[in-house]
Amino acid sequence: MEPAQPADRVPADRTPPDGQPPADVPAGGEPAATDPTPTPPPAAGAGKSERSPKDMAISLLVLLVPIALLLAFYRGFLGGDQATTVDPAPAIEQARSANVFPVSQPQGLGSDWKTVSARYQTVENGANLRLGYLTPEGRGVQLLQSSVPADRLLPAELTSQGQPQGPTELAGRTWQLYTARGNQQALVLLEPTRTVIVVGDARDNELRELAGSLR
Image (spheres, rainbow, N blue to C red):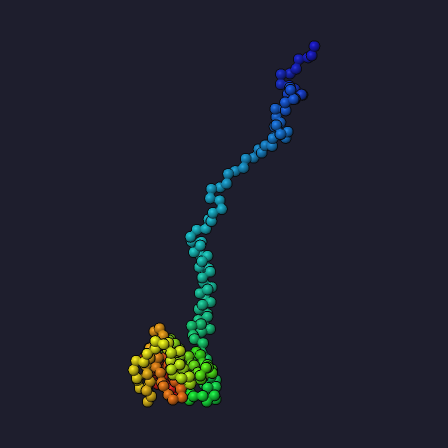
């Protein structure tokens, strides 16, 4: 006869009958893992920018201040708003040395007239001397002297729609006022060995000033 067993004793053999797995072992054969520390839920709004409009404005201001300082330096000390000028003398001398047509150049224009381009070149049926100017009002004007026949030169420079608008006297010479491309107008001087064209989007008084200065 076996001695009485304590009521709280756990049986040593936990194998259930009929080959069933122990009650504390899952069917897959591995003990179930338990994590005593639960994972906290993600904080509301995680990943979103917490920068305020004031912070963004300050950041933008920090970027803009150096740019403004660079622009001020470029304009104030490097002449960023001023047109790049050239010396027309070499192109004029080249045209005179070629002796294809008589060459004139402006005389007495103020310092606020800027020469921005100058080129002499031979072309089909003749040669051209082109001088580009920026007027005191900041508009562009081109002075062209050419030996190309006028019936070829004018349509090429003033478009086929360019039409004479009547004669005008400037410095003892008779010029013709022409329409040109876009909002441009032109003054044309026809001579036996050359054609002179003053054309641009400048006002009539500036075109006349340039044409009348030719000597």
